[in-house]
Structures are given as C-alpha cells and as structure tokens.
Length: 308
Image (tube, rainbow, N blue to C red):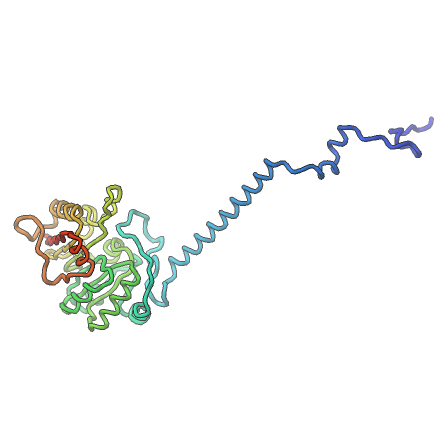
C-alpha cells in the first residue's frame, strides 16, 4: 500500500495553502510584528525606576555612613563620633553645617589633637589628669565660644570642659583660647548626654553651665528641650555636693520650665531665698547673642541651683 502524505498541500507542485487565522495569530513572525502591551511596558519601566531609586538610596546611605565615620579635617572632630555605639533617641540639639573660616580650620588642625576630643562613649575620662587637678565645670553648648574663652581667661584656676557639635564654634573657641593663653579649656565634640552617662565618673564635676540652650518653642518640640527631669537625674549623679548648676535663657516659657523642674528635683536647691531667678553673676559675660535678645526686648533669666 502506498504511503499518503499527511498534508496534500505539501506535495510537490501543489499550490501553497493560505495560513488559517489560528495559525497566523500564533505565528512567531506575527507576534514579533505586534506592538508591545502598554501595561507591561509601563510596569517594566516602573520596576526599572524603582531599582534605580533603590540603588541611589543605597549609595547615599553608604556616603552618609562614611561621612559619619570620617573627620571633616585631618585629625579633627568627627561628624558623628558615637556612631552606632549608642541607641537612637530624641536629641535636644540640631547639628548645623556652616562654613569654617581659614582661621578656624587652622586652629582645628593644630590644636584639636592637644585640646579636643570626640565623645565616642567608649572610655571613661580622668578629669584630674586632663586638667592637672583643677576643679572642672562642664559647659553644654558654647556657640562660637567667645563667652567660654573669656570665662577661661578670667578664671585660670577652673577647668572648663566645653561641649558642642558646631564645627566653626569649636575651631573658634580653640583659636580664642590660644590667643588668650588659656590652657584650662578642653573642647568635646558630640552628644553631652553620652559624655555624662558613659564617659564621666560619678561626682566628678564642680559645676555645670547651660547658657541659652535651644528653646524649641513649638509645643510639639518641647520634648526636645534639654532641661527635663531625666536630664537632672543624670547630671545630679555627676556633680559633686555643693556644685552649682547655672542656666540662662532669654525665652520666658523655657525659663519658667527650668525653674519648675529644678525646684521640684530633690537633689537641687535654689540659691535664691525667694525661690526665683538670680541676678546675672559677674562671671558670666554678656554675649553677642544675649545682646541681640536684649535689643529685641527679651528678658534674660539666670537660674543658679546647688547640688545637695
């Protein structure tokens, strides 16, 4: 029996049969010629854009991590000295980046290894050794350092441990201290809470100064104010009995809060018999910032409390 072809149209000499609609629809040539599905094209573009954004975020995160670990100047203060050694929490300060002058940079590069250190929270300081046995007052937040430098020059028998995160101010204070020959100043870069909690011994301070801290005037930001009951619990353990806690502010609502929380704390006693504000002591210089506040009609309040 002769073998019959499966498709008669494939026999030699037979005319070619036109493809059916089903065959044409599934033909690779036809599929390639069809326009792409708009929905799938948009989805692929969105996925590519998301991947690109994720890559940019990762690169930015890596850059910020390196900036936190590297000093802005060789041998100078680090951008984030404590890094990830300590827990994240609400901060009472806002780091500021501003231009460092040539004089400030020179002071940082020359004097930081001698008079400055980063608050890394990884060691306990020996203040007697650092200040050659002088009584030590901690100053939190010194701005551009003019008042601190003047107090150091006026009272060379007291060591001043000055803490701030503002690099131009750190350089300026070092420059001023060198100009006045004040070797009783040390500049600490970083978070004062970590310094107090991790790096200072109990009852090692002879005084504490907090002049014109950020008032955080908006109600939702009041939790960021430095002078709070928890802060007083911490500092009271680092101050010697009889040490004086001196605050000053030109923000009336913050002054009222300071007076309230200090008066309520069992380990602090107001030096004023009437339980109110104190006159500005002669040793606290009138700063440029304070003068600007006075020009605006702000009332400046000093509070002096003794650690009991």
